[in-house]
Image: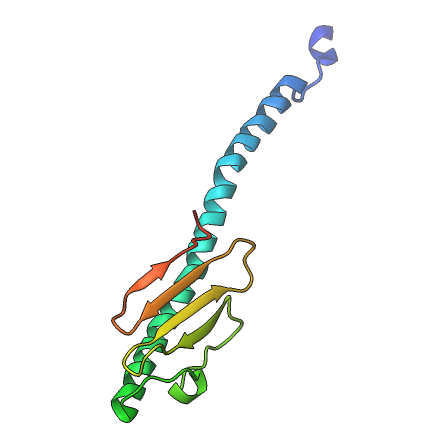
Length: 127
């Protein structure tokens, strides 16, 4: 009976080290995936805004028979804090290129869309 009373309960150092190692392995797998999903979520903002710019440009073109370089003139105004800055260039009266550049990311990320709706991404921050 005396032997049972002297025995202390708890975890050994080896057991604690194994738990810490398992948590470290899980974190090493989960954190990069979380960062990738977060990056892709931000990229959806760029795609959505470029689609809205294209729609606004087509409406402006229907009225004035030319595209505009002014986002205010076409009626595009993003709401909230933007992760991407939008610019528009008009090489000819019948073409435009809308560009979304990342403003808050550490890696460069640029999306472009033209009057045909062709969406391009180079460089891609999520790769």
